[in-house]
Length: 461
Image (cartoon, rainbow, N blue to C red; front, side, top):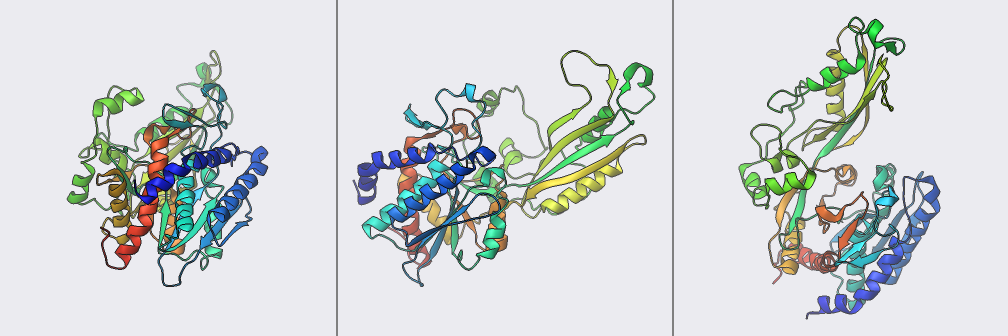
């Protein structure tokens, strides 16, 4: 047993005790009633960093929840890694669907069960403990900085301002993030890209009030009917989005990258079974995984109007609404796509209704090049720990702040996640395999060593 695995095994129980103390703090950023818990969680992590060996750790107030910054600088000439994570969690409701209390962590079936066990307290705490190991053993090979926020689950609304105002303090060579998934420990992967997001809400207005569907139906235009027809026209029969200019900035993935993505184990039947559907469909010319990971999409997230209560109410609604998200790929810009959508959607409105649309929020896609020292260090570290080279995977999800980091700080991010798709993040019974937590600590420690060797033009044996 080498020094790293010995340290982790020796201190495993303490690591879990400390992690469980953090998880017990219900740091739900979406709820005003948990505001004191947000401060408590930030203070807990500040204390954890200082005990681990940080030279300093400070909590910065924002207009929302506080941001924690910590650092240990060993040399002005050494590379600097900035670790990003978040201490806020999603609301636990519906509580009745949890098998155990969400903020009372337990270990069962080799997994930690609790809200935040994976997203992101468990994954963040891997970095705190990896940092502790390097400080306590004198094995620090580079400078380490931490930026830990409390608003990731509500849009990171104050983080860009913090980064802009503290750009000098946050100077680094790479940002290391564990807030994503891998396929499994047996088939490891690294998230090499994220899709962007453009989110809009539309409103179709017709008559000045809800009307009797018998007395007016057939003559007065029905906003709900119109909305459905308009949305249906946004895709053709080959799954292509019909908004003019939508694909103008889309850059096709190379054949090499598509071949690398195809190495990912994937069972269509198991995938359909896992979500309870009998067939899959999407844009012609692309595999299911490519449709999820490297192609833009347009989906209705919610649609409503008229009477939706119990029983019947025969009306012709005055208004109809929908929320629509468009997942974006590299080079597509969220605001430009929203402008194209709004221009097109309002232009196809028929006579008899008025249409309005609003861009609610969004962010850009992100891609990590696979030939940089930063990515290669991650790949080597995963392979060292798990004895298998990881597969690069483009995620269909979005973490808008990652592209913001590149825009504001000029730093690339490495998404070294150890969560699993089965961990039920954001859902009842969130969990995180204990082995992933422990192997994650080991991998992070290896990352620093490999990164420094690669930066110096050497290879780690």
